Image 1 (cartoon, rainbow, N blue to C red):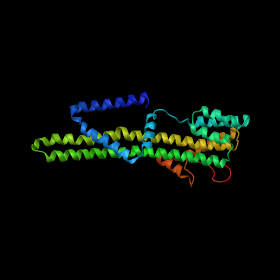
Image 2 (tube, rainbow, N blue to C red):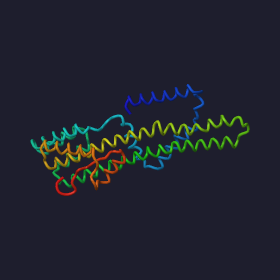
Image 3 (cartoon, rainbow, N blue to C red):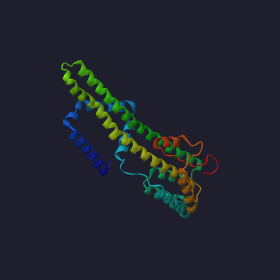
Image 4 (cartoon, helix red, strand yellow):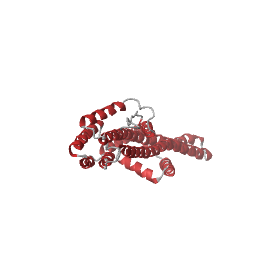
Amino acid sequence: MTPKQITILIAAGLLLVLALAMGSDLLLFINPAGLLLVVGGTLAGVFLAFPLETLRELWAELRSLGRSRVMGLDRLIAVFVELARLQRRAGARTLERRARALGNPFLALGVSLVVDELPWQEVKQRLEQEFDFFLSRREAQRGVLSLMGRLAPALGLAGTMIGLIRMLHGIKDPAAVTQGMSVALLTTFYGLMLANLLILPLERKLNERTRGEAVEMTLIIEGVMGLCLEENGAAMEARLNSFRQACAGSPPAGAKAGVELARRLAGLKLARPLARSGKP
């Protein structure tokens, strides 16, 4: 996370503490056992449900959520126009160094396949496979946060039930029921705060990153197809501008499952206007 996001998170936490302190004694909201139950139970649930590699990948993504890795459609179109002109002027082998300098691994992969002079069908298949692998990994990471968002309130409610059972089982003074009830409800409070103030916002942030990266990768596939055809700069610009307009519309019938997955992840209607036969 960036320093700006950390600052915002700390400020939000301080406001929450201030609001609790203004309403009553702050110590009333401290229950270490309940917090341990909610946090520990949520982590135990995801460790049981997902492989360790998925959790490592999610942690790496969360650490970099504040740093945008999307180049933007305008810049990508300008890059591919530049690559198309460079290809026609100096040949395809001059593209690889320029593509690597941009720092986008997916773009570098596509350009390297063009430099290797593979048939466009193989280039398209390889890039689409990589795109689908990316979406599959991101879906697994989103699933971790989604499960945590469901587990935290559920475990909070379970902690409340445990507290109530203990309180009612050992109660001797009926006047102590009110005090015991407030302690029992704290675990539900912890679960709701953890889910709605941390986990679900992180899931939404991850979805937004997925949406941007999915559009970027789809445009890269389209641009690489233009390089396979050795299109000039004007033709490349027209191709990618047409793709950008298609992104705002509805996807064509028979779109691939990977595009549908991207739409479910990010709520964006994507289009991948790549022909299934004939020229790309």
